[in-house]
Image (cartoon, rainbow over the protein chains, first blue to last red):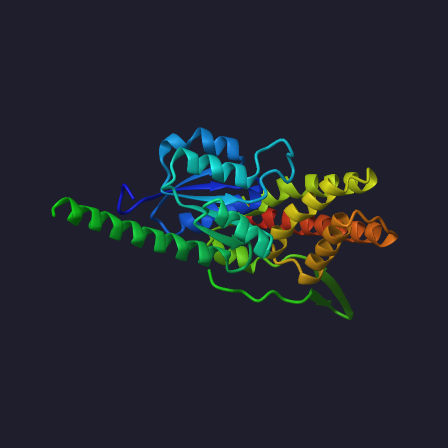
Length: 144
Length: 142
């Protein structure tokens, strides 16, 4: 992560209520720079901002059938920069959906439930810790 | 935020002299109150998002049933479901949404589906009324 204290987080969900809840939940944590997008298209337009983590809804074409779905957006994010971790979010607690997301190189899959925010926070903490270790390893490797 | 147990059905009793009035409450704001750390502005923001979004979803749900557009019906109900947890709406009503999704997925039309859609619509409408009142109270607190 570029800034040790602030994680640049993209939240992408066409459900305005859930998007608001996610934003508030992460704002309360204090160390996030949050960007919210109601569509995958808007998220892709802003990828040049280089998010540290993207939380992406699976079913983005639920209401607007012409919108890109979550998997399409995931593929585009990975094509832009394969290093950006993308956490897929969905109301569906189905193994096939989770496997599909992982096949498309999602970092993780979280079901929208009561424990959703706790799980997301834990995943982001793990990603941060991993990135820190990677950075330190790279630093040492360069000096060998 | 932790895990919060949802009440079964909330019945508010008001005793006024010899008269007892029972009102069924459709929403329970304890989850969003904890999520928003009891900040009235944040709670209002969440309620406003629900009030902006839900009437349109209910309308789309009813319209898609009328037009036998099973894909839209399924997608719309799917979109409504996460809000039940957030707004503390009884799990039984969430099960109604699951049943509607199931019928729509199987491209089935039945008289039961009409009743389920009507019931879910009523729950959402009642939830909106309660939340509008809560929003007014929150705005008075500011």
